[in-house]
Amino acid sequence: MYTRRTTFPIKPDASDQANEIAQTYGKILHSLPGHVSTVMFQDGDTVNSITTWDTEEHAEAVQSIRDDAQRDMGDLLTGAPSTTIVETVVHDVS
Image (cartoon, helix red, strand yellow):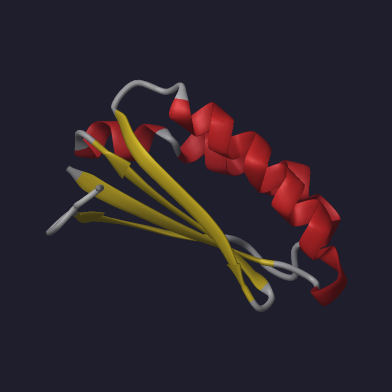
């Protein structure tokens, strides 16, 4: 499995709008091939998306969805999103 972490730096007053957009994309990610899990949360002025995929190829294929989210967030962002993909060491869901 592979974990993909994307951070979206947002303006301080954009929290509610950014969270609504994140919820929409959470549903989209859930329907994609190879999706294992998604966690999205806000930490200060950053919206974080952590998704787990069955293969590295599926994790990489989500790039276009990330680009769509960046476009939808548009003026809410203070900079470009950052994404890393790593091999998952532990994935325990109870």
